[in-house]
Length: 307
Image (cartoon, rainbow, N blue to C red; front, side):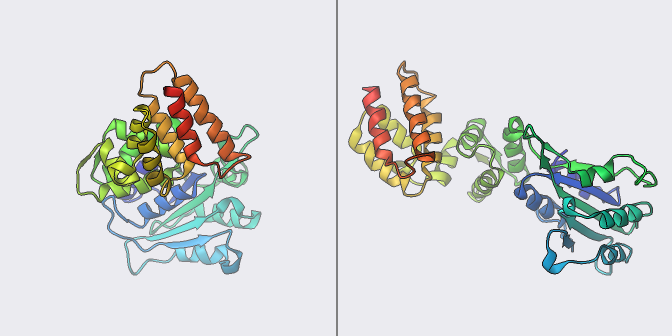
């Protein structure tokens, strides 16, 4: 289940009076809130009341939230209420919500949002609090409906499809090479990927290619990673160092290494294995003992290796 499912539920008028929304990434929570509020993706705009269990400075009693759910909205067809960080809810709050769910208001929609937790093998799973709502037990046996659970998390293997889907919802199409390049640079950082997609959507084009991604990511031709890698391949030390000067001023060194790695992988040369070793060595130094390692040192080593 995903953001797309949430959009479908919204567009169909929310068939259930309550939903559980699970994720591990705050970015996905923001995406879900945008959908619920009706922002973009065909939404009409919606007033939403949000209560955060983790915010002790502005704590609102669960009974007050339930009263709100049982109140007919004066401004929209249904009252929309979000309870965030429900994994932090105590026993008393859980029992009150379960009691409400035995006879939920049909004039409201409740979204119970929670952050998934990591198990011993570092896999995400529902918190015990949420399991108490969705797993049959003596405590919730009287709940009159099965709560739909919308899991927003995206598996690493599905990130490329997510990028394509996000782009489609913004009315643009991004080529496969461009999506692959973005994935190499940003990995599974959905927030960064989303920012790049939104920048591409502002270019005024319906179909975006790799060149467009390079333009938004690195600017002018002489100052992008492709140009840098090309002049490295041509063994032009002077141009390579000039290109590096333009790129490094606006690019994180680790992201730059990812871009160079991606471009080098398209070159057929028996010495590439040694080049990759140089990139790996640079990455280890940047992450460890020498975070201020000059990148020109790496560029010069790559040129030397390719001679």
